[in-house]
Length: 84
Figure 1 (cartoon, rainbow, N blue to C red):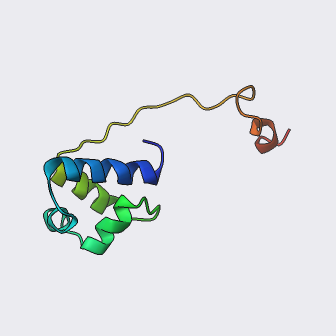
Figure 2: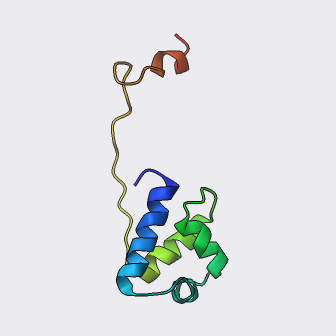
């Protein structure tokens, strides 16, 4: 996942897969339903600890994988951003 929208979609799909309502997941995660709605909609500024609590309630885990940074050939803005 690379965007907050993708995180929100993953949460929504996991919740629906368990047959839970937003209210049920919010209660299990210790958050309000309004907060959970914002998470599922991909709001970019939500508290990370609460996001992780929601993942835990859903049985989801987070794996971090490094990807190589784009090089100048694949990123047309790289030379501009590097001040060249």
